[in-house]
Image (tube, rainbow, N blue to C red; front, side, top):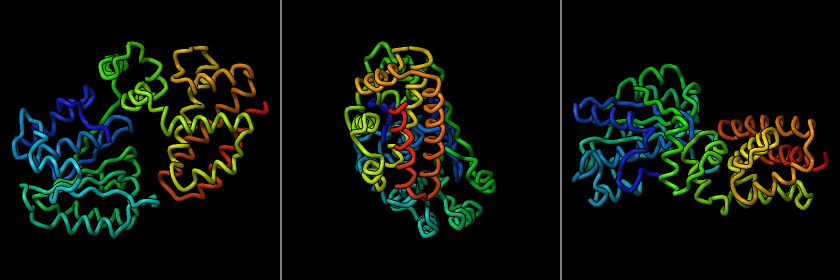
Length: 335
């Protein structure tokens, strides 16, 4: 997980949310529950975790955790006895009712070492309907010494009764100038607009692109896409490889690659291309540019976005879903 800067200072697009939490904490007016929402790539969970570190810290410094005391060390590893992080289990697309019941029991307990307990519920949109109703009971009668953070990219997916019982902490995509300045300082690269465009304006994914994470798993996926186009890899075999693990990442990369390539083919802007693999794919598409190819690429981009949402929210047959997308990508090589 991407945390704050080494100095402990929030990112520039997080300052208002951080200050709001600090003010409520100093005035002893923390809410019992917060709905932390906004699109991905903005570091929502990082801010919440940093605030938890501060709440548990034995020697806070200038409104930031010291990072050195015993509480800071165990909190950073997610092992603090007064911290509970709830996520969907591996292989599951839902937060199960048993997880929410356990959360409720934790909230009722007396804090071990801190003055309050904290619950972080990640991807709250994955709540099972029964789990959502169980959580609602806890929110309706909240323990006074527990703060619950519900994190979600899709607040509209939650029950209105849950949303109404939480204070909303909304994160918005920063202005391009803010992202540009922050990325230049964080990466040491002067030309960052291509990364911003490639990451759809989300600064943290843009930084990952600039820092060369394409050379890892993302690079392997782009190599696989190249192999599909050149008929070196079959859609069925590739779907089998990724169906159990990394299916969401693969579909995200397909959506991102199709978006970048479509923009490049329409504008000819070389600056949109980050890394040698994207340049290689762009060169391949440029030699086959046609109206049919542009239309098919646009359709594939839309379908991959829909598929990503299905994988995140439901439990579809990932083998068939990936096969379909990979087959459509591979057919672009025949146009």
